[in-house]
Picture 1 (cartoon, helix red, strand yellow):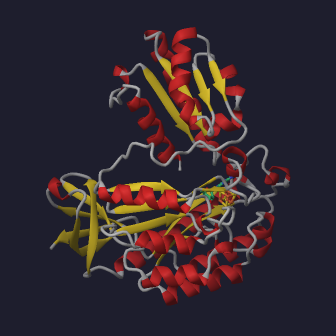
Picture 2 (tube, rainbow, N blue to C red):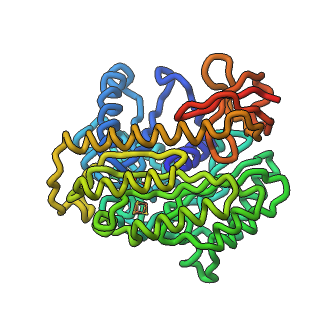
Picture 3 (tube, rainbow, N blue to C red):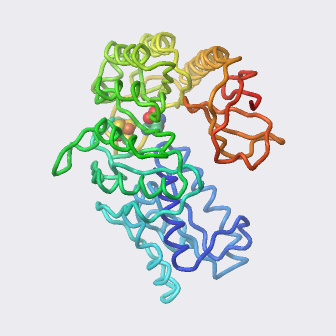
Length: 421
Ligand code: 5AD
Ligand code: SF4
């Protein structure tokens, strides 16, 4: 979602005659689009702003803008702590950015513009990073209030975008040469419930999958509590809907899941994962896991390891719990030592890396379709399989944006190698 917002910002500024530069020394405006999910992202922001101080001293006319979730979260604090930041804008103020920049140039006064709520995402107005694949957001915000998560506070309540608008955008993109679309939402499975004429996510997927020329449809993120048999069936039955589901587990123990306000149990998660594995051919399940949640004990962590072993996730994003001010988990007492958290985290990562490696090794020798996405390391091309795994192989850059057949020749935990056929 953050990347899509950057594409919106790029579009708006392009429209005003600004253009992007690769080299920071050439620029007159710097825009930092921030994340707030973990403290690390916030610290990164401080590092970036700190680095810009000397740069601004050397180039006094430089305009520094900070937007996105940390701007929304910290509000005036950024302007107060870093007076050389010219513009702070919130997650609901993106479309105002060109006008804020003009205001700053005219008045030379610092600006902090943060709406508490709103909806200013117009699907037509974004600058695609790639010529062959694109994001389309289908809903903004989240209603789930998982107890550790800052997202509902900085993105607001869930608002579904009208299916006609999504369909129209997808059709336009395909007519412009896009062959892969990633539908975005904090919880795509609850899509459409808030619309005047409610529809399900499966229904939307079905409609979009009928667009001629659209080769690959992806979506994220799926909340396990809202996943339906209808959705699993439609993925299984529709060739251009990819076989990959990102299904955040977060934790394996019922006690921790309850404290996280996730609204499902370990057994329920395992049941869904089993359904996916049995209904969708060659299914790929990836996940997010948090370790060290306040109150999590070794016994709880063992349940997480147990789910990891049973589901055999193809890939997992693993995080150490990060306390976010204002969330309800903030009030929970944390009795787990930092040292212990780190050890659990390492144990989880080692286990998952081994499983990812073994799952990748299973497809060595197969010939699979790859969307060539760009240049990888050395002279290699980089592309993705249907299941979203990265494949590196030798080839010429005229293949970028095309679907090619690749024989898988090698496997690592995080990527595969192959030979183009
Ligand atoms: N601490 C650690 N990880 C978090 N995530 C969200 N909030 C936190 C937090 N406070 C993780 C979840 C989510 C992913 C995007 O980030 O696993 O699925
Ligand atoms: Fe955060 Fe939970 Fe919403 Fe995901 S579903 S954005 S983890 S509150």
